[in-house]
Image 1 (cartoon, helix red, strand yellow):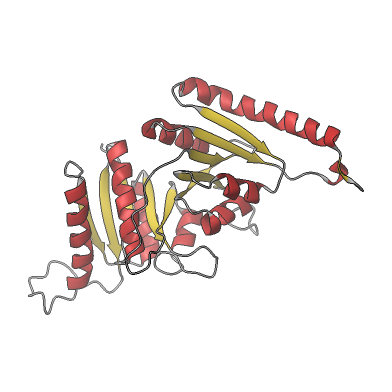
Image 2 (cartoon, one colour):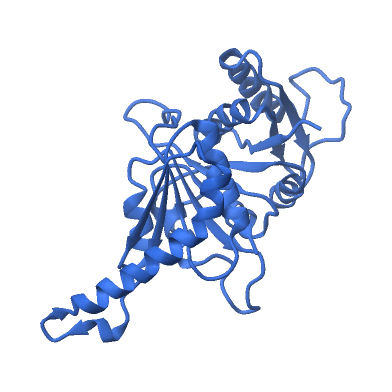
Length: 291
């Protein structure tokens, strides 16, 4: 069965930019692109009413125009439109269970600014069974947001505690398909005993860095063997993991971060690194659920 990439459309320039990114990705992955527009007030189908009285006219137009624009740019790509009379969050979560990934447009660089369909994207990111990609479209004076391209390396944020096979498989597979280097970033804050009254104890920091490099090398070894054609650069930053990842993602084509599927009942659904990436990274961000 051919894989499917689903993109959420709400009629905004940002969601159209996300659709273009998703079309490029679907072409690389030889997948069908599904354009999903969900709204609880959609009228039951079928309707043969003229356009001036068709309650679904604008919803149909959003999907139809996007599909025409994408197929003009990707003539060989399979693109299907889907109008769903459901709450957008529920529809996207259902689509995630049926898709290789979900792609959403995002606005703004701060937590107080909205994302696709207001507060919809964050619950989808936190609960989806498959990767969710947030595509930012930078605004330009006097025009719509430009369509994001895919220059630069693929960057993945990696912790060294617990399994992360889903995250690394997605990262290595994506870099292989794009033919770009994979940059693996591990950030590690310094412990209290590394600090001295005159700064930091370099013997301690050197030991911490060497140990982290050793663990990182061990974690990456089987994936380097499996994806021998991917150029891999592994980096250890003795800094806040969130700050390190956002800083190293400058100029990247895609930043990939993980999300634990199973977290403690009162713990936040997203970790600090994923939160920082979503709100501050300028490139597209993929949030990958893993054990």
